[in-house]
Image (cartoon, rainbow, N blue to C red; front, side, top):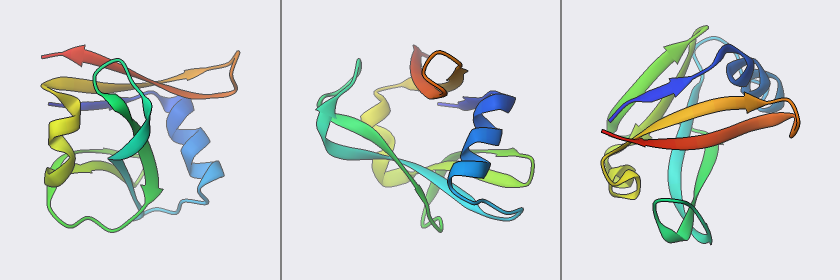
Length: 97
């Protein structure tokens, strides 16, 4: 499992979450909503300290990560984060490993 994030999305998160070099952004499974890989769950994000990192990517001094306890949500898919100008925000895509 991997995380990929484009430059525009990283810049958007940096501004929206008031991120500074050395900060951490966690992607986690949350109850409710829907996704293409887990019915009844959706992907949440938070500025958070890591507990047990399963996968991470560092971009512009910010670490984006998924904790071990949330790996089940991804069901052997990579997380791809792409900025969509028409929505003016990043969107999540999942790619089977």
